[in-house]
Image (cartoon, rainbow, N blue to C red; front, side):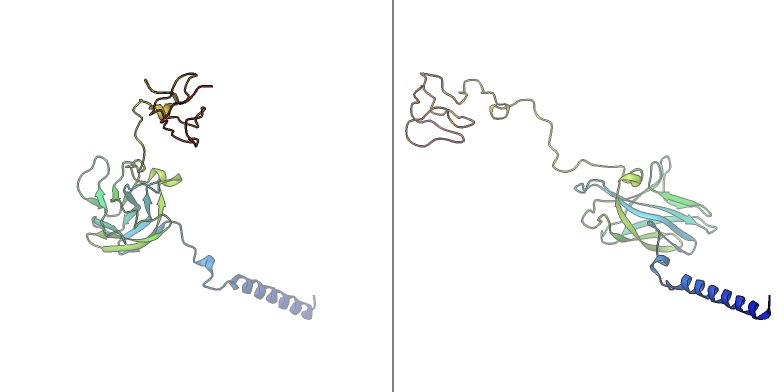
Length: 243
């Protein structure tokens, strides 16, 4: 190959490389694809790292039961740290901290270890009823306070205890408000459709008079004395002639 052909091939290769580089950078350093963040929030301060933080509410929107904060807390330091409090902005309340099943005392994040909040038999951070302040779909600020590191804050999504989060949600799930009690088993004449003892069924028999306090559930079948026809509860004051 002549030197001129070689120079032409090198120039073509250089142009192709430049175009590819420009295409790769065309989205820019601040492209939205570079700003995508995981669904569950994470942050770190000093020796403490918080991962998979989320607030999980009752599955029923009408429920006034508690919510929980779920997260995994890591301690990369050489000394244990105690989780002293967990707060969610807007609620004005601190979560009630509960140790894992079979344990007592404070919630400790061991040196070089981790602590899981939420889930069966794990430690828990339970928020009192705060439905008006903690709403599904929000991204609300959560602050974890540790004995040595201090406050570690981040924004986390609020989700209902459904699908994947059902196993991590509140263990206490009260019934929705307004649920009716069990029926007493005694049906009234109005609900059962059967007349009570001593009452007329609403249609007088041939040749009989309807009691003055007779009530019918529909329109009367006879023509009561006077004018007008009853369409609901009818009270007779005269005598109905049977036909």
